Length: 284
Image 1: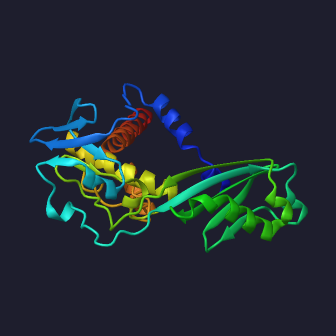
Image 2: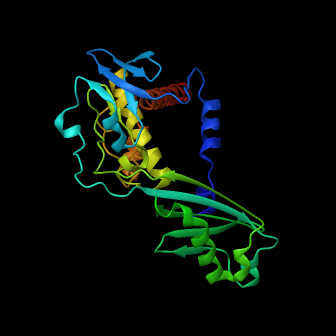
Image 3: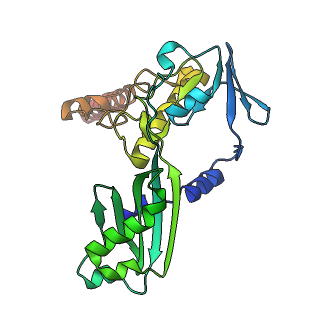
């Protein structure tokens, strides 16, 4: 994966979007607890008891978290998540960052790219002497992440990897989709659960952008249906939806014969013929 994608700061991305989006209020550390659906609007109640009214609501949360919201009226059966009888261990992802006096992997003849399947550990050289990556693991394996990462890197690049100058890591829960998320809106409630709801690009930022574009078009169809056509509501395909078929030479030639051109050149030719007839008559 490109380093620019793996080292992307979501916090910096949100700050940039906040600067670009004017007249937009972003509430931090507030959860939606209730969604009431009416004929002409939607009302959302947050964890502070404040009610928000809107023409459409986009739920950009993981699909397995939708079940925690209270809907009135209740969600149809096809939108509900089936309950799981067996409770599996939650998956965790830990991002690590360490620094060394010198890039020891370069002295060994390596670029720094590292991949281990079981357990899944990914590593890459960010800057000179700085090494980053992440590891997927269970809750029970959270305490042994540092030891596992350093042992695997030392086995690949040498024993010097066991003694970094600094070591930092952050662990968070990895959201897992129980089944394929919904992509079609339910009246004025629109689903957009990041890359999981994508149909073409189910990876990283590309899937999130595709899901966001679909949600925005559906919301626009609810608010201003006169500016949205059926082509806009189609799912994203491999081809570019905004590039039409290229016309041939004959079709391009006919497109230039519009009413203005025909009238102008007709008047010009008729006037030229009349002028020539007048000249020949005067000479004769």
